[in-house]
Length: 220
Image (cartoon, rainbow, N blue to C red; front, side, top):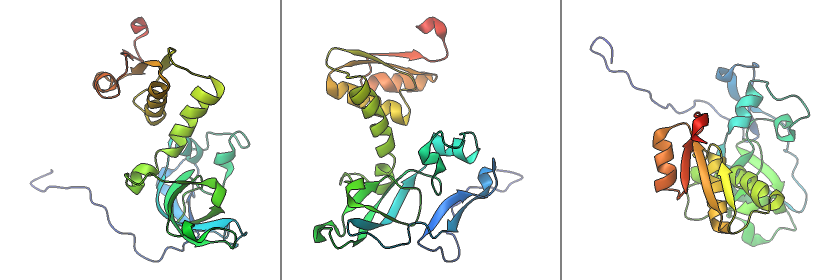
């Protein structure tokens, strides 16, 4: 509100045609404002017998994508950062199928680990059926966080009933996933967050046994 005039943020529909094979890229290193959808020939080749084409409904960007856009991840250190375009998880509807894919796959909503794009072509075995009770934008944020937490706690740490787990940044995406998986396995959870309101949330809503400040060393 300035000098008697109220200003509000509004979303405006993008004008013009965006090709389905467009990917999200940053055209100027370290300049987030230069993000744009750019046509690409990558993945246009249709397709092996086991592939499906997905019309993307929603895609997620996470902190790794911010680091990639700022050119802070060295080449070769992270395979996902070296891919064609930003993003690593999308949800959408299967609209075309290869000759070896069952007809029942058509129209199915799935999650796939692909960069952000309007349309994606992947192997059917690299897709996972999306939860039906969630909206596309909600589903798109789940996969990487839960796979990360699951691999860390189940595959590598063998967390089990009776264990105690300390989760730093428990109010974040991976933190949420870690807390839920730990509780599912029967472990107790101590969570940290720098925000007092988030620490209250961790105890009251996520069932964390104890919530501590991540910025107060005396809290430990």
